[in-house]
Length: 193
Image (cartoon, rainbow, N blue to C red; front, top):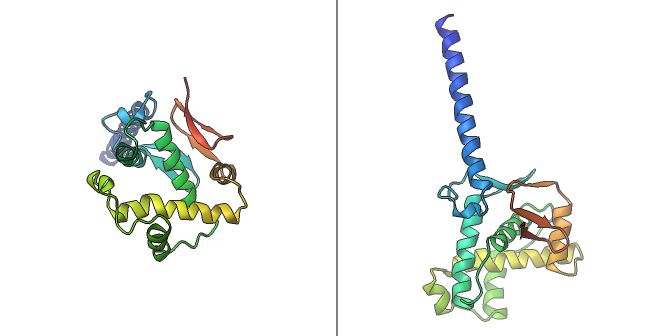
């Protein structure tokens, strides 16, 4: 066996071992009852829901969960945020961002809506104390809402649930976790028993 053959074989074995370790680690994250509880959930490489336009990863899901939790603690601390609610929001945001339809929401529209309709020229103190600033609020709350409503009108959907049902039905997607399932009727993720 020549040196180059041994080198190529060694690199191939090393790549195979690395791939198997990565696959095993991914499975240990996404196949647990609550993937967000895994210490590696914040890594950006663990896909949980994928379609042909990309994936929602555990990192995106965790970021959405933390944002919803901070927001909910200020609005209504008695109501807890669930992991399935956070995954639903992350997936819906993915559907909006990668929609084949155009949404003409501009930054000026976002500020105008927040200030004139919501009456929030500045953020309420409770949200600011939770670490949510105006840019985050506009990007995570107002912009997705305006985009959603623009697409809802374009597709003539009567509700947000109907809109997300239409958007999710237009593409194939795969839920890669074992405890979560997309409920087509309500357009939300549900936790399986």
